[in-house]
Length: 561
Image 1 (cartoon, helix red, strand yellow):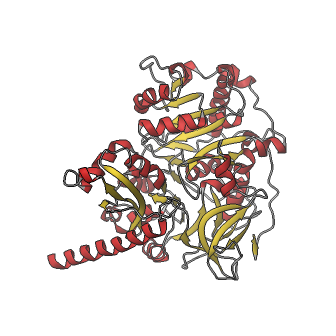
Image 2: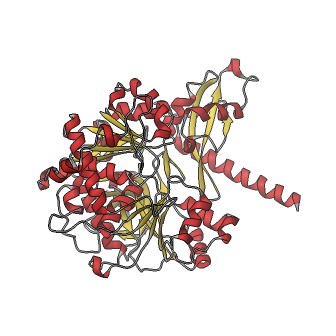
């Protein structure tokens, strides 16, 4: 059977995202909504202030000579001007692509080359990495600008974006962004966020203006229990913006939802757990959007007890699987409603939500968002019976356009009639609630960030001692870590240890991609006759090893007692 949303379709507009967020018949909101947690009184922005900067940047990009559809890369930690860059780039008809600030030079080069970005906005603390990566991707130095929440002096000949790129107040007053027809809204790429999809190397996911608008409307509808949202009767909320703004989850809430709902959001430059706890108490945060590792920290780490978290009323947990036991334990401990949702970069952000106000203790990811439909298929492509597990396929106005300049990957994941193959295995009950029970896709989730095994395998094969390698996720106490099974050359035996490989990769990948799950030497990496790694076997190895590790830890603890 094909499942449709239990809720009536929303009348979703198709226009430029700026026209949606800043309607011409409304005065932009003048109270600050973006605050820097380190200096909230000195560093904050209202939508009205942001709109002036958005227009300045859009005007400057046009004068710089960018053409519609050109990509601008942002390489920065979280800060209050990222919404300006995001909306200025996208609203002017260009494409925003954010880069993980923890990326190494080769990773930045890959994204620059893949997107063919014409211009880089880089935080001063990351300038050296950008300057090393840019020439390798054929981006000239004059197309790099410093980008932060304060005006910077020129560094190594690189100008601040305010002086070298942005227009004046007068330019902003005259600037008008392009108005899109419904067709243009659907076919104009707004963002390229990187995902591994169901398999392989990270790929650029093309999301349109219409996708963004649809997902905001869907999420607002589900969050507020299907009541029409109006500013005048909105609940008083405060959010904390620690989710990375190069990621779809952070972009939806910290940028788009914040403007649409006029919710104050306190932005953290980087996530430190005690700073996070302190900010919740200091700013009386009411709602958290998190991933499971944060809930693990809240539950397990002793620092939690030292902070006042009583202002928090509800928590949305997404981006990775969450066990019902942990969900229920934290609901009881903190006396707070915790609901799950489900999404992926390819659905813009989310497609299932537990309806606002519904108490859940089952671990469900909720119900289908309005305007969406899905089906659950077995390995033969046949629809499964109610309650039976099947791979999730989904269709709706929030489904991405495809993968950036990768027709093969697009065809593998997205059918001609709009069905997205998600790689997740789900079940559904007769009330229309869904549970994610397994994952077919290869990618590993580390602190809700995606790690592609194929990417790490490629890096490992660059090591002189490695003859073959396979990477898989190993789960220990609800957290997943990359683990490598490596075959070394005969001549390297006795000369290199697993820990040497583990240390070697540290300088070559971002922190979340490190082999924190360990390295194991094996005689052979199991493969099919076609040469493909037998991922099922690798997962079985990891499950076996995880059980052994936990038994050893338990035995060690008992021995100490």
